[in-house]
Image (cartoon, rainbow, N blue to C red; front, side, top):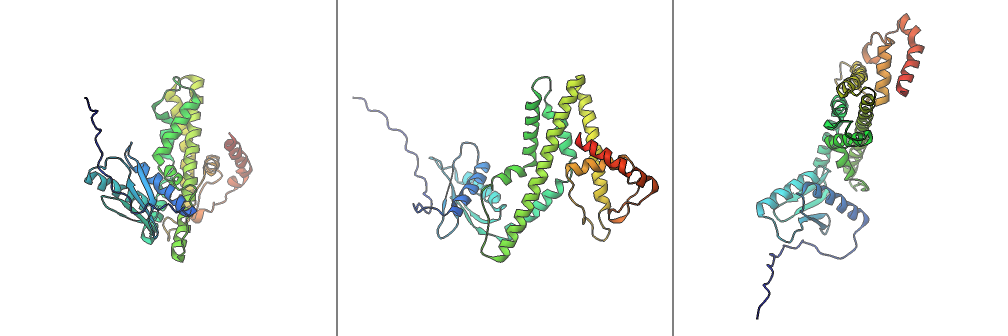
Length: 311
């Protein structure tokens, strides 16, 4: 009589600390979703992540696979997840068995503020985005519809910006704290996140406009290099103009202060104004030095700037 061979039995996985069935509070469920999104992004493809409640407060994260990974591999993965989760502002503890996500940490929130401020400063420059946008991610407009090329270019630039994906992971989660100093830090973080999101959106708008312009120029004369060169030259004009105005607005006694973030519309208007000679010289604090020629040309230049912005 033949006997069917038994399947190999996987080693028993260490269960999480808490397998309670009590319903989760809405804020805890929202936190679980956020932590799971972050950890799933960090985990290698095919590795499932489990997230559960940790009484009396907090969450625990574990590698939810039938066969547990090697100790060193699990240790590295848990610490990678801890690093990414702590960037949101939570205090984390990790070892080879699990990751513990505890309450808000003032040190982690201060670190997030610094990261957001640094990201916001880098996002004030549009040169790299413009150069990548006109390159169309190496695609040829003759090989695909313009809409597909523009969408692929914007998706690539969005991945390079990194912030849109990370901010999207926090969608639907209202952050708060019962401690006043932590609540103030959270409010500062949320405000900076809104500014970073708006700045990223401007980069994506620029990428969409420039990629579409390259495709449009190419459809006219069939020369991709020429189309890229012409569109990039037009872009550099108003990017350069906005940097001149930001630089003139800084006070000598406070380096870096008084430099407002300029949107795409303001950049184009600034370029139009400078090119038409309205502002011949700019003195401290961004106040234009009035000249008869400037006063006479002001109405015409304002009309020209509006016309260019509309185009």
